[in-house]
Image 1 (cartoon, rainbow, N blue to C red):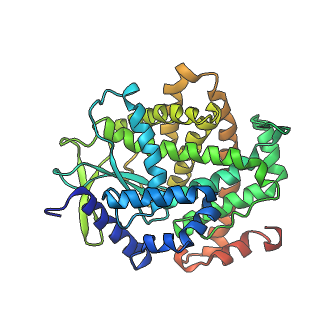
Image 2: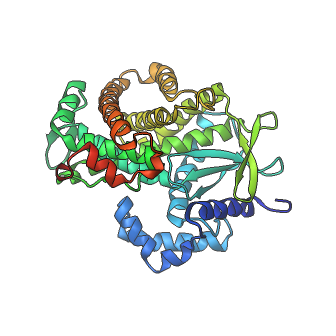
Image 3: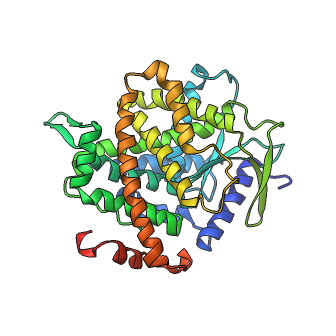
Length: 390
């Protein structure tokens, strides 16, 4: 690492993640300019065709100015850059951190729902790493969850969804697709550490929910980004911070060892940074709060899937405690809006209870003492429900 600048260091980290994940280095420039990456973006993230020329122009400018890594997926980079730029623009309203530069960041090829802030060494600024799969993860889970909110009013100008807990429970009971798709996602996380294997095909009326789902995913993702930025703006990575060594392939670097109070602070400031940015985009405050809640609930579920054998190793406060802290701190200013979160509590509690029953069945009949890695996704699906009904 001696003599490297921050961008060169980031490239080394990204390269090692690619090799460890895929066994090779991906050439995104080649993928992008022959159209494959663009087709992927349209299919997976509802990418607009008219945005293509703008993204190509932006990519060329960033390459010529040496501000983007040669191992960076251009779409991911632009997505996160837009969010961080907006956070940086408004940060001084919420935190006294005048003069700080916009944080360095990059994406790494990994499938799970994570983002982390890293400290290359004492001579370099910290770098925020976003795991690329987080975008797909957010869209997959919100596509499923929004179907649990029944359509209340449908006219040519506006679609309104019911948020009452009892109506949500009724919707889950009457729509088995929701339970099955949620089960697919959680099992895919448990067995494979990603959501690439799960079936998230949409019902026929998906277009009615698309705007709601995309707004919820945007809120989810903006909060994750804002939380990591908050660590940087709050000075959590100073010389006195406790740091551990992380090894990725041939690269070693420092990682912040989280302090629980700092995590609570980053959650709260992250929420405060998220809300005005999305209000500017005309996303409803209740959807913004819902997206933050979905992110934390899913983190709680992932913790539950991994809790066995990891007692005493937790680096962060339990996600449920973090949720309570966010709600408590927002209570004074947003009391009237927070009631919407009751619906999400009912939704997740009900789906998690149903999943827990299925999980016991999987453990008893599918795993039966075997390592999870030996079980195929098709074997799981055949055991837990009739393929014809999926």
